[in-house]
Length: 484
Image (tube, rainbow, N blue to C red; front, side, top):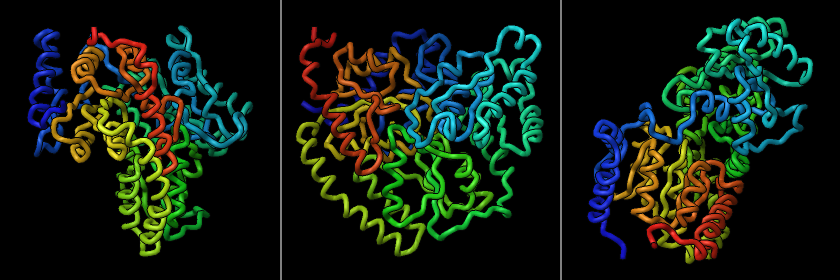
């Protein structure tokens, strides 16, 4: 029997209090600020965020290097991205996010290759500037068709004081102005990967946009030019989005980082509108372009037909009646496809409950897609969200939803055990824990090796995957601990 909203709010508040009892008093007091229940009238979910994790308590976060190299810069396909420091960070970040791209590896695309300066003890003692210079020379000899190089600094670089900016300027001059971007994304900076996004955005601003003479650009503009920003093309997501935008009459002049190029990045200041997918990782550069170049930006959500239609219409408001009519034409074109997907899967999924804990925008953006299938999101939270992410989340969640920021492994397990959702959507670190608990799971960072999930085509894949997870017969062969 389902609970009323008031009963759900009471239960979830009691659940938070019960969970916190396992901690020492000081830790419980700190963690209490990160846990809340959505209630009517709340505009910020009432949780603390973007704060250092409690020492000794296992959480799911990454570091600034992960935010820069793994998210923002890594998918730019025609650039070589050097992991400057010991081999471990580079190895761990190698080809892990399924950023699909078109190209020939080692010729015009390098995203699935790994370049590292492989620091040894002597490099820590004597410095690595000379080694970096040598590596940059080797890259140019071995891969002469690369369009640029980024230097992604690991922790030791900041600690020993290597001057990657001076080396980058020197080698760029020697290479006739070849783009070399130093990125100060040492992992110890900030409290999570989020600062790495910000640092990466600043590097784009200072070492790509500011180095490009826009006045001398030969790029030919049209009134309908847009840029897709903050879509990393996980499983082909950006391609699914691009199809719809182009079908409504817009011209996508750049798409980054997923399947992106340096030239597209350089052309972005010529766009008439920036459409922003991942707000957390790319709002900084979008705001910069609005301030410096006068380019407006708008968030969009292409998860599920309801949000897709709303986003297409909002994007169209920035253009003339031709584009507005194009948006309606695209929405109408896919109505039959959406109806068929919903008719097939909604009877199997309606009323099923979901708990989410993911990075970026997913904790709020995917809610609409679940609701289009009749599913209910009963808990959600961010790994590295900021206050403005939680403010945006209030527009998506219903009263009584459990909200958790930077949730610990212990807390997440307790919440799932008590609420007993039909599905958990989170990352690979949590996947096998919950499957062993007998809870269906989807890995929602990279779509569990499926996708795309964006766009109308992606909605059908999303629905199939959720049905496959929840209604698999395997769950009848396992027993959750709370059923003993």
